Image (cartoon, rainbow over all chains, first blue to last red; front, side, top):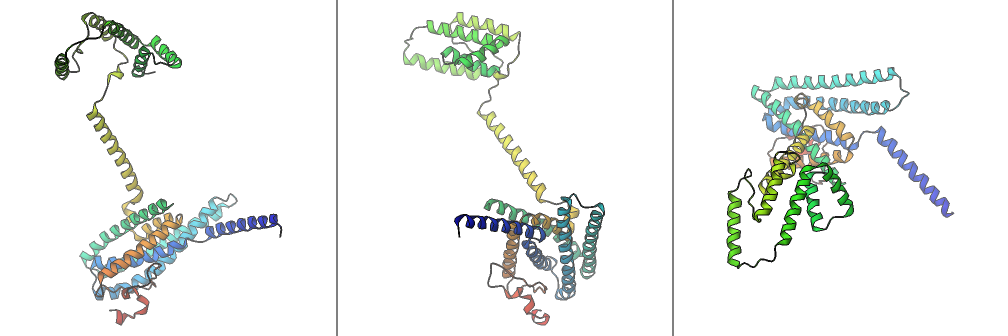
Length: 164
Length: 225
């Protein structure tokens, strides 16, 4: 094989690999996000159990519902993330009709509503199982945990930037 | 050109160190600034008179006393007072005349402000504190979410996931950091720690040994509790 043919072949291969990797990256959710969701749930459950000082009877009642809610909400969040990813791509496409946008926006609004509704449903159930002090502790725990996650994410992003 | 800069150039000109380009700039300034023209005149008088003075031959004791007296007067003098003259009477009079003219026509005197070390240090501290506050507040604003968003775990997660979707490395770092905390906290809890019956099959990338407490799927509810 001639030297020039090898060079052309290499260039075409690299171009195809880069193109496919970009197409793949656009169409698929980041792999890290699924692990983040799962790990956040495990850590949140662990800390909630400690923060609320749940009894065995309470955990036996709460955890099955907690697991069910998490599965449903995780699926809804994944659907919402996909819809938003696709919407980002649509916005850049000038040929998309208004009808398409309307449908997408309605779908996103519906998913958001479903997530809120499911979260609210679980919290209502949770509050039937908790004492007044535990309910108060849950509110504070929730705020602290969410803020802690944002701070942790900030550190993770900073670490990424420093490594670059 | 500012008067402060022009007066530095005047000093250089009298020392014969001024380039032709700067000389032109200075001349341009002098045509418009009366304060600097007066300054130039006073400096020329001082230089002319100084050149007339021959080498002085006083004993070291005299110089010591002169220095002490000068320092004492400098300490006593306040910014509003006349500057102490150590020049011969004739020169002092010439300069006083020029100053008299200048006082009646005060303009462009900003060059007279010369902060001392303490003022400069204070200014530096204030600037550093202001910069720190701007950076700190800016960063806090980025990291913190409004209360209604923090109250909802799902809204907070959604916001977080949207940021992480654009930063795969940060997502991976965060996942790893969460794993480490989970392992740490469950190890700290010990074998009698709280059992958590979670459906997720918790897997770690970095740890081969996963504590029994986290092997949820391998335990049935009776064994676990």
